[in-house]
Length: 346
Image (cartoon, rainbow, N blue to C red; front, side):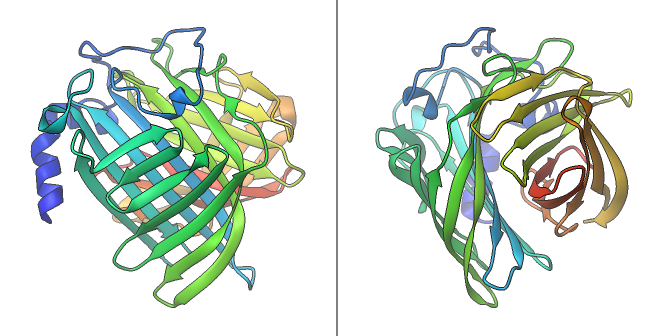
């Protein structure tokens, strides 16, 4: 274990990690909680919300190389608070960590970083936009024009992003309910980035282009104590429409779901529990776990009945908080590609 990982585990309380999946359980511990009818203020809300317990800036990208090979890219910055609020120096209760990954049809390369808030090692500023941890950066003059870089022992990437559409808000104008008990988050996305740059992999440098999707979400208690994990889909269809859908798996075997249909111009329609259905079709042995890597996804109101296949079924994020994350191909009633994240598979 490296020194930074050791410090992270010392500073990050075991009680938080044990509460729900990855510390996303029901006890808000005096933190602020999302309320209906939110009013977002930009660019301020692109930045951190230290009175809430958890938050992320979550970028995924579907990329194509010169020979048509599909690739996937992930960059995520997480903030997790030990207590509400902010302070200077080592008195800061904010803990930061980040994940970076590249997926090819044959490889999945992933790494992570850890930092304590208040000492300049990690954070987010909004004008101009600057999200960082160590030398990993997502930054630009504003949220529509960004550059991205990160590196691990076996890979690195250097990318430019340009937004070609508006922000979209999930749930009821950005108030995204996660359970029948009422747990919720504030949740919006920028799903219209065009991205291009260079992947540096063991086999050499690869110039890539594609589409990227950035999720912004914060809360203090987004899971109920009867939920064990989630399956999250971001799908981009030929023709320009997009679909975000997730299901949260209940301990009794049922699910709680929600979805957002996104038109090419950014117009959205939110769908409540039960409208979006994801059913596993095939599983794979992944890092000693049985993980669904082929799905049937349906949204009847939009005529969606598609098969979602992992580009690389072995896209396991073998990090301090393990989960599956990787690019997918879409076929059936709609054609396209996207990203799939699955948590809670033990």
